Image (cartoon, rainbow, N blue to C red; front, side, top):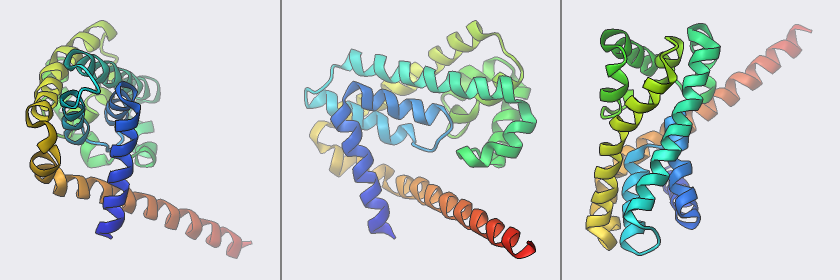
Amino acid sequence: MFEFIESILKVIIEIINSLGYWGIGGGMLIESACIPLPSEVVLPLAGNMVASGKLTLLGANIAVAVGSMIGSFLAYAVGYWGGRPFILKYGKYFFVSEEHFYLAEKTFNKYGVAAVFFGRLLPVIRTFISLPAGIAKMDIKKFTIYSLIGMIPWNFMLIYLGYAFGQRYETVIRPIFKKFEYGVIGIIVLIILAFCFKFFFKKKKTAHNK
């Protein structure tokens, strides 16, 4: 099992590495669109690519900010157009658990627009905070500004961390996040298996009823 997860991680890292700016931007787009590809994996890798000369520090920060905002807009749109019932009913199909959604919703309801700023600095909440913001139909200009000023410090910190350790990324940074990475990929695998089981079980039950 761990070998399988490790192989998936290697493929993800290789893809991001090969695509450069597009890779790190795309990785952050995925994370901000509520799909579990954690920034704790993507951003230090971006810093490592800066250290190796593949990217510039400024360019890396711009790429991840753009990717993060596009992903955030997608999640915002889901909340805006789909609403709370849609997310609770179909969220599981695009990796939004009810627990994580309720946590983000509770934070937003308690702190309002400020939650979009502070939420970008908090684990889990930063990924899902766009959904309740969309449901509340938060002003898109405020959403953009609060999101950017909230995510930039977090992005810069982890990119710089990867940059500072440079070639020691594999021996110093990766072990810190390795257990976290395994957990995230493991969750993805379990969700896919559960979805497949539910699909085939439902299909078999339908055929039996006929």
